[in-house]
Image (tube, rainbow, N blue to C red; front, side, top):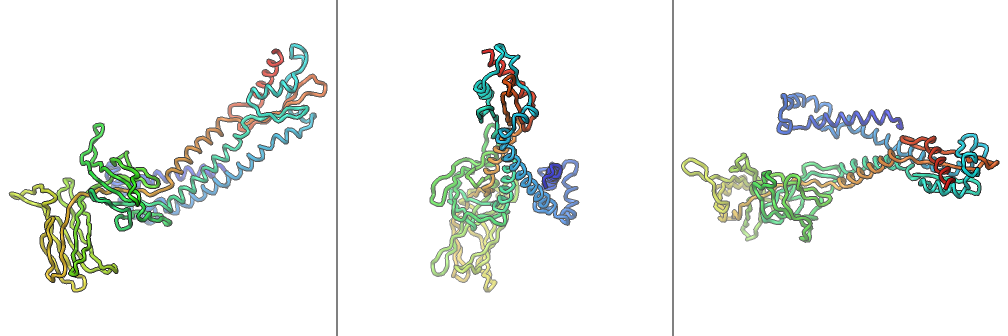
Amino acid sequence: MRAPRLAAGLLLYLTIYAILATLLAQNDGEFGNINGMYERIVAIQPILQKVALDRPYSAPWFLIPLLFLFLCTISCAIKRTLLAFKRRKIVGKLDDLTSETLQKRGVRLVTSAQTEDGSLPSMDKVAHVLEEEGFSLYTTDDRVIGSRARWALFASPIFHWILVFSFLVVGIGQLTRADISVRVPLNKETPFSVDNTLIENAGLLYRFPENRYQMLVTDLNLGFSEDGIIRTMAPETTLMDSQGRIIRHQLVYPNNTIRAWPLMIHAHDYGLAAFFSFINADGSTVPVTVTMQFVSETRDLTDPITFEMSDSSENPLFQIDFILTPEFENGRMIPIRMSESKGHIKIVDLYSNAIVIDEEIKVGKTVTAVTNDLEVSFDELTYYAQFRVVDDWSVYPLYLSLILSLIAVGVALLTTPMFLVIEQSSDENSLFAYGRIYRPYSYSVDEMYELISRALLRQSRE
């Protein structure tokens, strides 16, 4: 599990897999149908389904290698952490070296013959030189021990543990995130609840933030333009908490989404919202809001809708079919005010299957059932804005882990931890040094010896 080649191979495999998965997920509009690529993908869809590649990121061909890469990263992180702690103890080992071993394994830095006055620099001067070169000192009576960038020994382990953290964030994030669609009628505060939203995709452990937020749209800003770029719409949107306190208030359009951790809210589409009141024989009123999508690019016709009205025990009472009817003049469809709109409503009693209402209804008008025990009022017709909401807490922790990993890998690549011990020979004619360098990418032990030797000779002349 600690083999670098295995980890590199898994990374290469997952990278190629992700590229292919992205291509296979493209639709006709996104692909531009280059050289008939979209038709080719559609043709192989049955094969993709057989090997679970129609759901690429939940397929075993993705999850199993990803799990192995995660285990490899943990194994490597543990190995590098233990190695860093072991190397950190090098100071004690240098102090334990005997004079004979140090002179045998080390080098002669300076001799008395090299100095102008024929005497060796004192150990205090040696310590001073090392401090000037950025070494932290661990002095004893007869030798000086120093280290530089000792803390950088842990840069590589920290980088690998950040990768482990990223894996966990991604995994847990996928289990606890959701993509949600919500339709908000114009000038109507809409609670962020299960009844008012559609959860399009959710992780196994996702918990809906019931009644924690509410949204208000005061203007759709159709045809909004900014810097010469015309947007389809830019709804003026307010996101509030359950107490009505404003969290965000802004126009929402591509590259200007509402970010209120853990939510990210994108404007997606708009349509029409119809408000009805169902008045029972006992005088009780049940308000119902339904939304209708436009069926053409000119946005002059909407889909018919079917919905049910239930009693207090959630038992269905009526099935309602409704469609807006356009206005014609001289055989041509003409625009009308929403307050003058009309539609056809058909209501079926689900107990008797009898049609109790089947007639035209206008905004602001009421129709009565043939049984006289139900009235329906068409209260209002207005626009709604549709939003795509990503409820994902893991986005910002991932950004943070990316920043920290870049810092850690930069430290690991650009720093060179050094350890050095210097001792005077018994005849007091030479200074011997023995050093260790880890990650010597741009610096060698010999260069360190030369650096300290020149500094000592320069110090002796001052």
